Every structure is written in structure tokens, then in C-alpha cells.
Length: 396
Ligand code: BMA
Image (cartoon, rainbow, N blue to C red; front, side, top):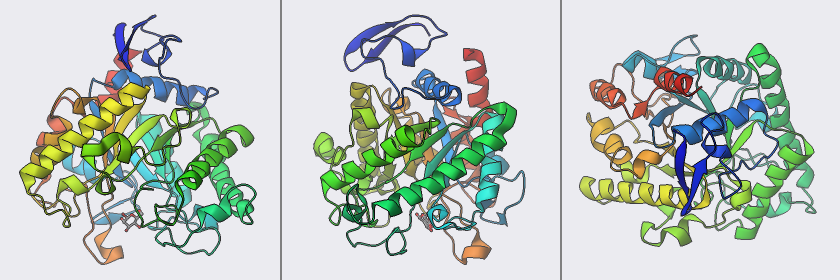
């Protein structure tokens, strides 16, 4: 699609197909946060811009690490076993890396995570990384409400602890790049400091001043990109839906926004509109709110030349057998705006035996919604891994 692209009200004529949407000229075309992105990440950036408005990538957290009924078995994936294809986006969480742990907070071995990331990349999948970082000062988990951020910023007494935590990522990432070998560097969608408008994480609202959160984001970016030379990251920012007011979207969504020069993708973590047990609204009202907020997200992103995605979401234990088409799909596919989301990622399928509970958000063959997931995935707009890879092959 050469031709006319619309960014923030400005029409830009793309120079040629091979340059792609993201390089269409100086008139306001989207630019990555990192002007020195390496080739693999630049290609991911351009691919996502090209795919925008052509389909929504389906993603799943920890998809190839474990499922409801299996753990760390090569080749397995609840999504693939349900619908015949891997998800197009793989979410991973590196919480625990900063402590030097061998496995993340949910028991995913970091060496294995790297292997799964590389395999996904080779198949044409996309890896997205979040970070439930333990408090670098006290060692407590992400979920606590003491003021921490102000003590981690440059000039504060514990700034070195933040740098040390980030250094662990630099090390992990460097090994990922080395191990990827001939396939080139593995690009990542990097989504640190998520759901900061909630009050459940130590970097969250109430125990963190707005300016301090912004400073935390920006120092993270500057440290990794400028000091450590990490150039394989697209930067994704993701407030939580339950703590924003769609009627005052601009004001509430952009609370503590780090800036257009520090964010590539505007995300939203939305469990709230998908049947969250604390949401008293009925299903129709929730569906309408979901469509409304996704549309606002996409339009806000468009106005800033940013990508948009449902960076996390789902309903714990799925809840209804037609969840995929009647709830998630009904929102994602509602109209021309919602359809411009780059991806929608559902949270993890906790392993029942290891965790001793049901805590799943993705499909799996034993669940009564499996048939409905196949219908959802069969929609041409919903892209699993091989469909996305095939589309992108056509682009090249
Ligand atoms: C939460 C839950 C937790 C998990 C955390 C990080 O939403 O799934 O069980 O430890 O995400 O993955």
C-alpha cells in the first residue's frame, strides 16, 4: 500500500512501498523512540506500521513456556493445540531477573525463555517483554505500596540499585542477541513500568509522584539506549483501564505520560471491560465501554503517530463459552478504529498442577470455549503467527 497515510490529521504520501509507512518522510511520519534501532527492530517497527489496519495480531503471555496442563515441554502451546497455529505475539515477564534468579516470578527459566523467544522470532513471531520488578531496595515483590521510585532516581541514594537491575536486563538481552546467531538480533516490544495508574505496584500512583514516574521511565530509556547501547527495543507504555475514565480519556489515560519521544506504542491493559468480577456493569454496557475505550486509544495513538495495542487483557478462567467472539472479538473487530490495534494479548495460562489453582486467560483444548476460539481465530482480521508471517512475506 503506497499512497496516502494519515497521521495526526496530516496526509502524507508514502515515497515507495519498500520504505513503508514508518519512513514516509519528515512531515510527521512516525519515528521510533530510538533513532539507532538495529535492523531487526527497525523491521519490526515498519512491519507493525504496515500491518496496522490490515489485521490484529493475537498474543498470549508465556504461551510456549507452559499451559494449563503442561509445563516446559518443547513445541507445546495451548493456542496452537486449540487453533492449529501459534500466537503471533508472545508475552514474557522478566520479574526476578534483577535479583539474579534463574527463573522468573512464575517459574519460567530465563535460559529457556531466551530459547523460546528465539524460536518464536525464527517462525516470524513477535516477543513482548514486561517486568514485574522486585523492589530493588527492599527486595519485596512488585505488589507493595511504599514509596520507592523517588529513592531510585538519579541523585537519590539508591539510584545504583536501579542501574544494577537494568544491567541484568542488558546482560539477558545481550545473550539473547548472541544466541540468535544467523537470524539476526531478536527485536523486543519492551513494556516496563506497566499499569502505573493503578496503586498495586510500587511504581504506581499514590506512592509515586507523577513527575517521578516520568523520570523513572525516561531514565530507563536513556540508560538502556544511550548509555548501554541497547537498540533492539520498541517502547510500549500501558496504563490500566480500570483506573481511567473513558469520558475523560485524554486527561486520565495520559496521566504520567513519558512523552512522544519516549513511547513507540500506546498500550492498554484491560481486564475491566471483559467481565472483571468487580465490574458491576452488564455485558452489553461492558462491551460498549470496551469499544469506546479501544477507539479512543487508537485515535489518540494516531494523533501522535504511535502504534496502539491491547497490551494485556482477558478474563480470568474465560467465564463464558462464547468469550472469544462475543466479548473479546466483538470489541476488537467492532469498527474501523478498533481494527487498527496492532495486537491483543491475553494473559497467561497458569499451570494448574504447579500453582494449585485455575488462573488462565488463553484458550486450551480442554476448555469449553475452544470451539469459539477457533471461530475467533478464523476471522481473517485476527492474525495468528503463520498468517501474520505470510502477510509480511507478501509485503517484502
Ligand atoms: C499476575 C498474575 C500473577 C503473576 C503476575 C506476573 O497478573 O498472573 O500470578 O505472578 O501476573 O506474571
